[in-house]
Image 1 (cartoon, rainbow, N blue to C red):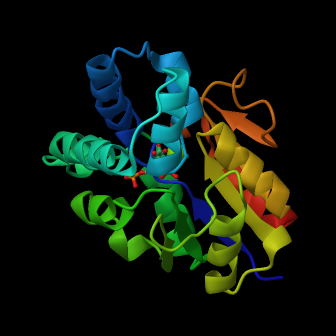
Image 2 (image 1 turned 180 degrees about the vertical axis):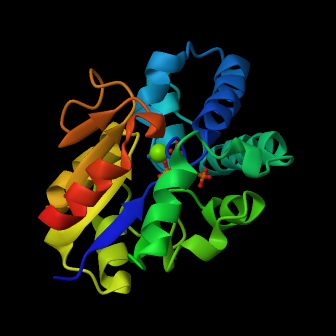
Length: 218
Ligand code: G16
Ligand code: MG
């Protein structure tokens, strides 16, 4: 069997989920739309465009295409300003241990992110070399919860879909992995990621023995 490990980026490898939240919160405040961390859960793993649509629906606002595009740009500019100074210190705790373990064993690894900024972030934190392929927001036509991003990743890795593992912090991402028939590992609160096959608060909770067993079972 050809196995593959697929990682989401924001909220799994790096805590950019917090920066996305700050950028959406800034726009929501400007538009007078109530927005908090709970509302932000529905924005995780979801494309930029879809997030803005959701925000405007929350505020019951209808806007012109020009205004919509202008807000998309300003949200991204704010986000880019937050991540400007990012470096490897922002890789989440416990992540390197797992990435190194897989890399040492030559296990095919992919990044599967909804973000159009994914490659830039990987470069900033020095992880580009770890991934055999990067499938990002520029490569997909259908956003999570559609499984497209992970199916493309499996194909590019030459991995069997059912022998792929996906690490995700977003509801939409877990749904995408499950629909693809992959093993889903939720990173975050188990009350939120109820559909995941396995759940961990963060990577510090993941033992290498668990990864080893998982590989044997795939
Ligand atoms: C992410 C975030 C989402 C964000 C999306 C698009 O993906 O979780 O909150 O809206 O990317 O990002 P961008 O605006 O940078 O293109 P993931 O899939 O890495 O969690
Ligand atoms: Mg994510």
